[in-house]
Length: 256
Ligand code: 6PG
Image (cartoon, rainbow, N blue to C red; front, side, top):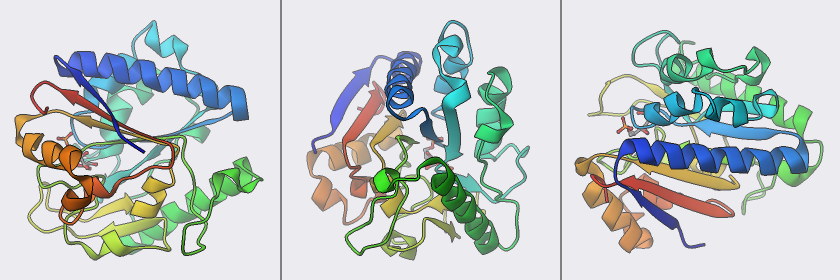
């Protein structure tokens, strides 16, 4: 499937458009299945989107009662730490909207060792999908015959090195084909701490993936991925993201 590329004059307009897309998609999913599974991205870029989604009238348009929130990755810190992806989303959006705590599926990244945190999150995901989707519609199997969850929408960012979620270039986790969640200990990244991440098969089993990218430092990576994803995929994990139905790139004018 060819990616849909949309460019915006700034991060604010990107956030508005992303919120509109999320609301439309959530309404479709709730109409069809009564639930919307949304995986939130980490990093700083999505903050503007989260703040926009927390403000009326947008916040009143989201079917929060039927929306379940997950994370694509998390740093191994406490959930109120300034480096925590959960903390970013909680402060900017979750604390300001009527989403039930039962619908917030946080990565318990503070568990030690990180491998225990990854195992615990995979257990949370398996339990959720078993409870909410009795048919296999949302547990399709990979080419290797392993079942993976199909999230309705996964939000992702891209690093200047082409990483996405916490899938970093050259990391063995790129070859994971069985587990849904993994612990990684990336080198030369900021902050230099272990992370928990969804694996590539989970990301690619999603109905839709939306990259949100801002920053001139990512321009080279973005251009390389959009020009030749197969060639870029030999180096950049973000180029290996190929969701089942729809791939969106929302770019602000600094990153395109
Ligand atoms: C993380 C993210 C990571 C992020 C990119 C872009 O935990 O850091 O999940 O993949 O999306 O590094 O980050 P910025 O949006 O801050 O540039």
